Length: 224
Image (cartoon, rainbow, N blue to C red; front, side, top):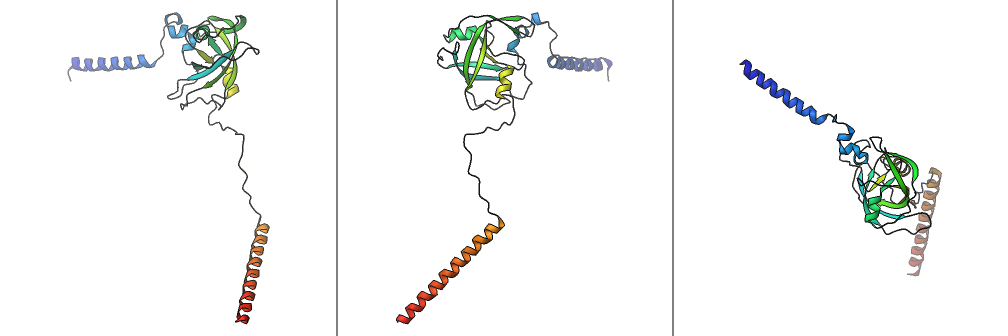
């Protein structure tokens, strides 16, 4: 084979291999160069599963404190994130749906992936439920959940379900069995001695019926 042709083929294979691994390996860019890293909660941090994106549409009603009434239900997108200690809701989402809350900043330690600290603007209660019946690694109980959410000024998400709520609700529990409010009546199984007694009673009843039938026939014959 001609050396020049051999070199061309070798270079082509090298380029193909290089391009393949370039797309497979993670990027080496710094956090400041990658917007997905800057806004840490836009990246899915839970263990990857096939065809699972850890996002669900949820219906959520909101109230500001125990004494206030619940708002109407609003549709939002929730991201289930095991790396977030708290449940979070964006202030922009609350403004869009027209929900007011009292700003009461606290010292909650909310960090993004690049260690940037996020200021907490207050807390609200949310009564929420996933609306999608989509199959996947996420499992939601057949009920509305009530959780506390930290309000933060970020526009990269609507709602984040954090680690504590994930554990309390068993959202990542696989093959969970739900206990309903009712149970079936257990099937009665008779013992061997009981079965023998029942069989004897049936035989005696049959024998008595045969005797009564025979007596009736004899009476009819005597008449005629």
